[in-house]
Length: 206
Ligand SMILES: [Zn+2]
Image: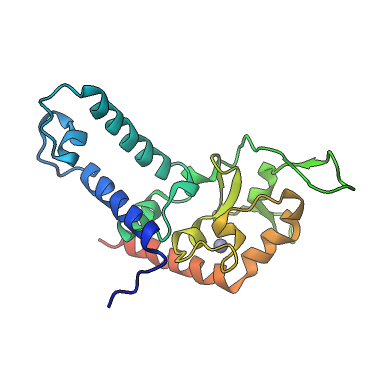
């Protein structure tokens, strides 16, 4: 049954992306690796070479940003891309060494005060002093915001009112405490974390 209505636009975008990813992941019968041309099935024998180059560049940009910037993922993430991202893991998306952009707090009292994310936030301090990496935490350089890898991966909605700010992008650095630990303990996060772990196990299967 068709249940796409309000989410039609992002879904179409996701399908476009899926096509790009599928056609770029080998198994193409194109010689000399000119995949961009075959993607469009163009036989451009006229002289608009410039347009052709632009198309190629655009596709390259989409593909690169999806694999380096969590904010570039469509909502919902198409399954073929999700599988690929799970195989890659969250590490390439963490950008945990920065640079992080400072955010100025609005309001009279705090005028001129700016706060910044630090690498330390990517580690959780255990009661015994041990520090463990928060693998779920990823920073988007383009949105200059924090996201949750697994919650974003399994998000079906990106409406701010209906979902976590770690799905839509979190930037209120002065609220890192307690928002980070709140998110970590939330039911929504734990559910997505479990899905993520299950999928990791599944990709390890022969
Ligand atoms: Zn989460």
